[in-house]
Image 1 (cartoon, rainbow, N blue to C red):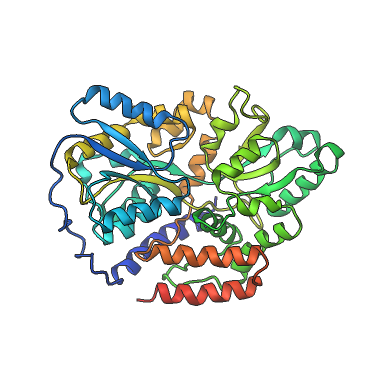
Image 2: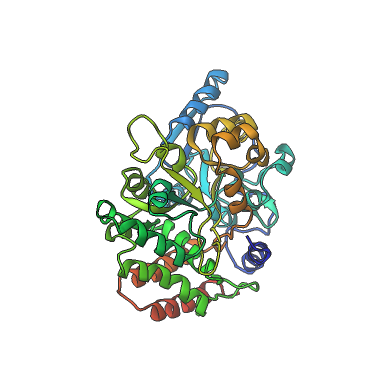
Length: 434
């Protein structure tokens, strides 16, 4: 990845801090303690609100904790599969000042919103060895330079591809550009047996995944959602080129019609069923797609590469999840200790082995045994270190909704690319105005 991408990512983080500092919010007290919550005290049973545990390893780790802490047991509360719906339930819980959820499994981009509204606790940095975590992941857990969430899973977008099909078609390397991706698809689909395969899919339904994929397309064309001063920049040629990559893919059927409804799990199932040549997806897909229990038709047939871009390698959106403590819950001391347990190197290694999700501890990316089992780790680490965060804003719900509306309306033909981006530019200017 280029130094430009790294600078842009760091700049956007800095800009986000400036933008947030200028956002008036009745729940923000200037960055000190959570006035609504008090100290991290109290021990006893707690509830952990999270998305679906697709691997079962989360429950395995919880069971391990519960066996050692019979008076401080953790209960998993599974929320809906879609990130937007998870966020809505957590916000409703917080607005009601409910004690139902103790630990929240937050998407990395929600930290600012939850911290600014004092829905989560400020955490003691000195009780976590943050220097051993990936720096971009740590930054996602901070608001106004204070720690409000601890990075548990990181994420970078990867290109999964059917190496067996590319090899058979004479394509010797994964594509680095969008043009190369289209050319590789055409060669694979030239044979009757593969003519019905989908070329490329990502997360294109109208939800948070589309914000991610749209951002990546713009970034991979050399553009940005916000510039270095925090001003919206989606009225540029680069942004248009990025959105047109998605729009044209739908028009030419290189992106299958069904993919416009795909969330992560929909696309994973399609790829595992052998319906796709290329798939933009998070690392967690690796373990499930490589399963040898008969659930995957592509086990041993695919590999992973960096995302392609307009003129060279693309730029991932930074993903991942952090654990935070609800400001309204009881037994916060237990919650703090459970987060320490879950973010330990041993627990993260266990999770990597079971799920192939991206760890946040840097050492695991350089572990020879892990690299042997998960050869994509080097590519993934580079993806994460050079990834660009989504716009971090207290009004993030409005920002991401505007981005989804623009991308979806263009991809479904309801609006031209120019009109969709012009409207998005206006909305973002309003939402980020200081």
